Structure formats: C-alpha cells, structure tokens
Length: 354
Image 1: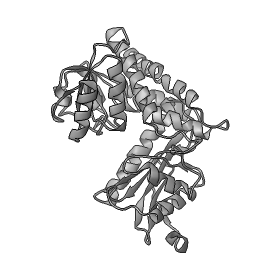
Image 2: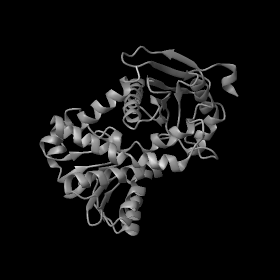
Image 3: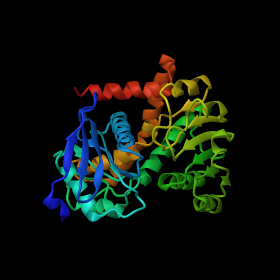
Image 4: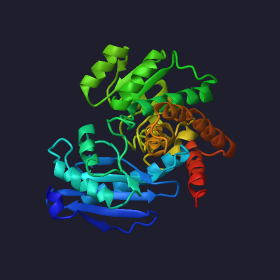
C-alpha cells in the first residue's frame, strides 16, 4: 500500500475550546482533511467522517469544528458516555475515492489511540467505511455482524418520539393521526420518517431536491408535493427540517406557518438568537441535537463491554421523548428559548464529569 512508504501527516492546529485539532494529509493518496476532537470529558469522542468537495481548507476546518462541538452536546444531552469529534476529507464524494486514501485516513485515526472513533457521515458509503475498518479498530456503525449498522432507523425512531412529545406539549395529546407534517428532505432518515408517520395516520407534505424522491413519497404515502422554496411557509402542525442546516434564520422565521419544528437536520438555527425569534413567534422548537440523537445513542452500545444490543439501543432512543419534555419544562420555567434550555442541560451534563 502506498501509505506504508510515507506516513500520513498530522499537523496540530491550536483552536481554543477544543482538545485536539489536526490537519491530516498524505501526498501519495491525495488525502487532505481535518480531525477535530472537541471534548472527551464524558468518554471517547465520536463523530462521522464526511467527504465533501469543500471550496477551501478553511471551510472544511470550520465544518469539522462546528460539527464536533455539536456532537459533544448531542452525546451529553442523550446521556451517552461519549464526547464530540468529527473528521472531514476534502474530496468529491461523486468522484473516485481510492482504497489507499481511505487506509491513510484510518492510519490518522489510529494515531489518536482511541480518543476519536470514526463512523459514517455524508459523502462516504458503507462499502468505503468498511475499507477504513480494514486498517483501524476505532470505528463504529458498520454494516457487519456485531456492529450497529445503519443508524437511520434509530434516528427516525427518535424523531418520531420527539414529534409525539411536541404534540403533547402543544395539543395535550401525542396522537399523530390527523396531524399535518411537512418534511423538508427525503434522504435516508427523511423518507423513513415519512413512512412511519404515514402508518401513524399523518397528512404529509414533502419536498426534496431530487424529483424521484418526491414521486416516491407521493406514490407510497399519498403525500402532497410542494416546491422546495414553498415548504418552509406551508401551513402545518409540524415542520420537519430533514435536509440542510441554517434554514431557520431572520429571513425564513417570519414566513413560518407551523405550530412547531421537529426535524433531523443538524444545525437548523443559523444563529443562536434565532431560537429566541422562534419563541417570540410562539413556534415551539425542538432542538435538533436532542431530536436527531438516535444514531449516536445507538452506536454507543458497540463500545459497551457486553457488546451491541439493538433492543437496549431502541429503548434508550425511546427516552428522547422525556428528554425533550425536560427541555420544554425548563424553557417555560426560566422563560427562555428551548434552544437555550437544551444548551444549559447539556452543559451541566458535560462539566459534571470534570
């Protein structure tokens, strides 16, 4: 293998508030990226590796920093014995990604000696992740025996529980039947969520950048299709952002016609102050890192001494319902946004381990 003749380079980057940040590179394979470890106070850091054609190294670094910090808070508020990390590789995910490059990345992970565990994220396929696993034991969420596999069913299950908790908060009942739910994004989690909601009797409104996904949802679930620019302002009980981050902002929040927001997309608020804007509009926001934690909760069981248990993972994801209720309760008690309430709960859990 090429990387055996020249070890990958890990250049330390000093970033305040982060335990370890590295620029990773390997000239023979073209590897270039970042591994960011935000915190290991609660346990080893966990975060998927994202392959993306970033415009420049700075944008890749910022993405890794933002996502690794988010993983710390997601793990903490979910009571997972994990910290937050993230890796990004600068490459076109639709182009050729060599096995040598993936093996070089695995060697970078090894150099952190278990302080960072890698996993699947956008841009990397299950097969490519298996190639990474050939060279490192510090990896979870694989499609193989004894591993937790595809996290999407657990993430979707967690979003469903969050929707039920939110309906209870706004209507006094968790019943989904008859409610109108608008889903922005029909990816692996969004489509699975649409299916679950269909069987619970919801009226679905959907959109996606891929027409074939819209056609599938209309055909299978009798969903109403709308343009991607219309979904945020459509009247509904719950808006479920399941695609992009930053879609809740000063421009879009005034146009919302939903009672609540519960979705699986990461970093839905463009700015921290946007949580307060939603509160002022009387729109209940379920903080995304509480809602979409099912995948993290699931994979943590791979690191338990007793080994992975899908039943235990399922039952732990179920608790998203009560965790979200606690967020809503604190927000009302302190008269703060739900985003701020979730942040305070997560901070307490993180630093109680110091």
